[in-house]
Length: 595
Image (tube, rainbow, N blue to C red; front, side, top):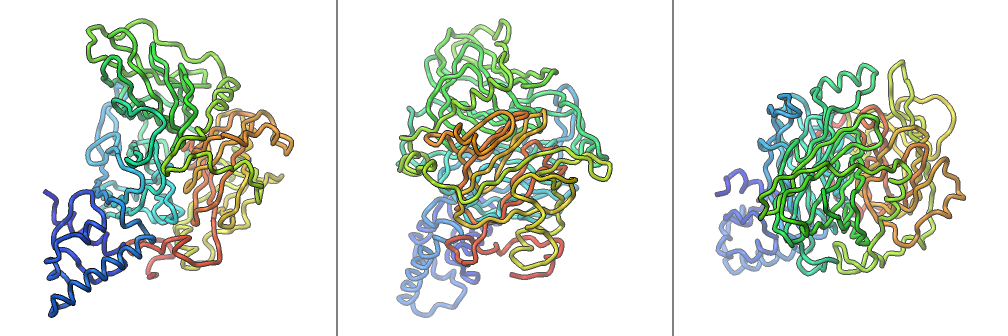
């Protein structure tokens, strides 16, 4: 049975949606997943729950019909009233788990490591009340969830005040027009190194076709590197101006050993996400080929692979048919592009197996950076498949659009004030104690500068700044990530997915546009950049807000390889961006300011 607190939370959420603060339309607490239209079909006898005294039953019925109509009108703002609501209450705590043979303090969500999986459907409305029982402020960010018109819920320090210890905050967002495999994780301090991460699986609505037979099962695998040292120790090490050593191991779903069971002859979807700190991983299954079908919300051309490189922050989904002899087989995740090899295994168990996994592990790919880049170029958009909407993905002809602006972003690893930092176009980002989104909304001066970061690299010394790059709503950008270092890079943009139109070696020049894929490049939210190489993307800025552009390699993000993209227009309209949530936390110079 649902608690009275949960019931109150639902009613408050609905009151916020309807923008009526003083009305309590229904006495009864609805089911876990419901829509506002369900509320309007609720027993009309609940009229007595109106906060205003009732004297005319017929007038009250008319009033209720009127209010339900108003709810429908307002459904275009904040969230869609016709789509289901899903309610969650999560509590974040520390706990001790034995990992890599060492008892370690990890971050648990509802006592789980990794955290609970969110299985939702396109356009679901998520109401998630997060209680922070840690000894430090905390936020979760929803990696790959676009937060349409709603950067207020992005869960990074540029948009949200962190949740203080022994306090809570309710996230309210929608999986608007999205399908696919995504993740969430802590964005504050170095908490990601302690866990607190989990999977988000967004399924298609029943009326939307998928470009493959419905799988017989669905497995989620969160793979990532791991340190034995605590997150506080690692953070202190970085704060001292040093860099981290190579991780100690690799985990699959927070373990070094796990089993996934299926029936011989059946086909299963494996959703694989790299939730690690810094290491590109190769994923493979002994004796089985994998059919790639989805990458971060894009349905792909269905090529077959023996192994796949999954870089930090990325997600892929493959179909695997259990078409081998009935026995157990190894599932392998191993590090890439490093002299030291880290490998972990899980088991694919045939339900009729009587034979344990055996034999040598299938070898990691022999090819290096170039071969991995060649594999990445084989990832193509399935132009005829639907994604979250009925219309085919390929109906948007991105390659025929002329970019309004070209931005070149060069990463670097400078010393600033004698300490190691990471920078973008010479600027190493520092967090403000006032979220940029609040400063922008309330007109608080002195928090950030749109002039501190340039749109292309230039000479000069690196420096510290709270850097924001300004762009206009509906611009169509060409962004080039230039990596002149000898290490892999992984870049993520909140609020968007983007077309990955090209990879290349050495320095990017305008002449390299001849290498672009302007026909069927897939869209994703996180892209790798190989050493001494470049990667180019197109992005359509159709989502107003303050959006974090960051390195997905967490040491680099923590030490400054990030900035914010302010997508803005002078036209103030709920069609472009929602208003500040009534429950938005205040911190820094925003303390005491009311909406």
